[in-house]
Image 1: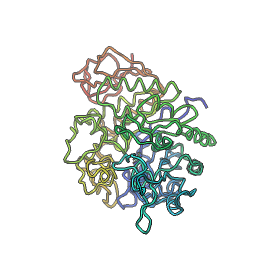
Image 2: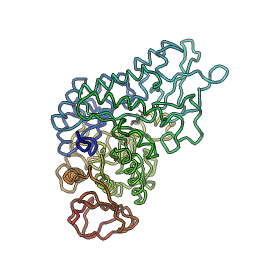
Image 3: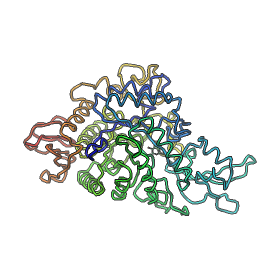
Image 4: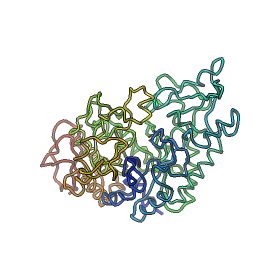
Length: 539
Ligand code: NOJ
């Protein structure tokens, strides 16, 4: 098969966050049968694939990213037969299916961890995790100074039944998410089995959670004071060279299967050349481009990030994987309406509120810019409706561990995980048949519900549908980008194939060149307003 036919090179992949997508059972939590019912909606939108966030057995301490059994569906979401049915129905509709793989940590309720605790220090069971003796006279201090991404310390001490302290275990996330020890061959081979289980079930790929975190620097040295856990100053727990051997191994496992199965790295590695190492020909196929997601609303920055990303990925023969929103960041329809457009953290009612009209206008423009770029793109459920973040969610509903672990300093990620509005005039806006919803939906979602937008000209949904169709008919995903300079510093301007793209990220309107307008994020009449993008057919 020639490279160009590999589906993931140009695919538009729609992220389903199962808890919040569609609830068929009526318990207020989205589930797999609900997702199956909504597949025709996604086909109509024109996506090539879906990626499902975890639906595996889990105590849900981190929305399912705390897995208690990788080969079982949590009853909250249905059962294994539903997962098979979802894969089969998607394929019948021509939609590929990507599932989440969470290899950095398990739940503390996973059998492996329970066995590790029971077996005691020095045992093979314990060696599957990152256990260590503490420092201090009585081991009362954690083994090093690493912190959790969610706030507070990254170590928790086991306590014996008599109340005395035992060994400590590392958790880069919540204390209910112990890190696995990837130096241990038992862990590696257990994950080969997990991959094969879902590959046998027919999945087309895996989105790999925390792909830059599996291997820690040997000796577990202290992190520097300035280490940013998801920022640009990487500490000894991130992006270690040793992770690549794991991905070469997985590449070979996927190669045993027919079709183009693919691995996508969720790796917060800001150095684009380092990130490209994850998508070398014998490793993963895609890596989310978070430099693009976190870029401020600023034309020079966009040009720089786009050019550097394409160059870095070209050097290893990989496509670039664009993304603007997901279940971990403030939705871009709100983020881009903030004073600091690069601030991706959640917000509460007491925080400065985004300008929702400005945010939506920029979000539509940003999306149109993204979907014209060569490579693959991920969409997050609800962005096709222009959904804003729920920035006034009452605190008592918050479930993201970030809220508790930061001592209520950070609102966390619940605001981007609010259940989808399907029908304006229905209980829970059509999310569930009973009107139950695990998080309350903001009033603003009513006017944005799917039934208010599908097939409605000029709606955000129609803009997404039209741009996906035009992207496909003009083969933009497979194309290549040539910059245009003559529109000034504030305009991101380029051609891709026979399409000219202008995104006006600056403060004043720009005179449009001649050419048939294929699509625009707002009405244009000879001029491209600020915060707007247009696609023109090159004459
Ligand atoms: C990244 C996931 O996207 C996020 O939701 C999760 O909390 C962490 N990894 C830990 O698994």
